[in-house]
Length: 420
Image 1 (cartoon, helix red, strand yellow):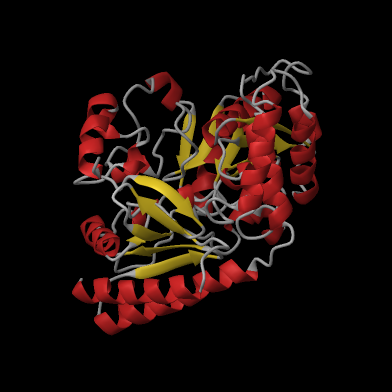
Image 2 (tube, rainbow, N blue to C red; image 1 turned 90 degrees about the vertical axis):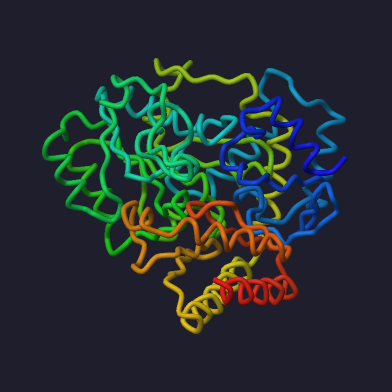
């Protein structure tokens, strides 16, 4: 059955034929049936060099044989027990030992769950009601996160979401990323009632936006001054740039950290952790409730252990260097062809914004030419290059990408950008 026929069936079953909005694009999304290494193959048999990599988790590449073997071994032993397992302890120890700020942690099933529970425990610990997030910062799809968020909500022109009660939105303050004054202003007005600031240290759901100057350091100082907590959402950046969190690269210690994606090796996962005195507020030790039938799922734990064991021996300069070379080539093309575009990169993730100005926050990101990005996306798709299908997503490099992928990508990008 061809892709178009399958998609017609999907349209009858799922809203717009998909189970996550960022997977839809016109006229119909590519439907993959298998992937290995850096390559993914659709149901019609066409092969693509993949730069979505499952929206980030597949840092080792698709179908890594060592990870696959560990998952298969776990299937034979059982896939759900409803009780503590040794692998939960093993993966928890790996993460705790790698990330300096984490004394204790809890596994969840998604990044959405992780940030939701992190916000709840921050409120429970401090006894304060307000949460401060960044405009365009994306922290999953729960009510407290869907206030001027990024990712799919930006792609479809919906800065928040219908169904979020006004009473909820009034407990979420919105500051400007890379604008310390906007944060200080909110704290001057609401500081005694702000439980926590939550931010992606590197914004990854409006493309890629790096922190400027001492912005993250200022968040640490402001939250300490007002006895609020600092939450780093490292669902994207955790173990992406080095065998740790971005926080350890820059030397800033948050009170709570959330992670996901890579730590599950491609299986559904989330994690929130931090200071012991905060985490001991979680039930049954404390009175902040959090639970999940599939939290610490044996298949996820097996995949996560295998992935992090491999990553620990990896030289991250391989993927960071690949992205740096690609950035250089793209900047050269932008200059040569006279295109209004900028390339933002942070280690092994990057995005090209069709924008006259540098992209440093939500406001500048939303001025990008999304129609031009869409033309580039489809032009690359025709040439066998798969980018995430939105100006406001991120391209990821994996350890499976090689020199042949690089040359083919540069050639395809050159042809497409020349046409634009």
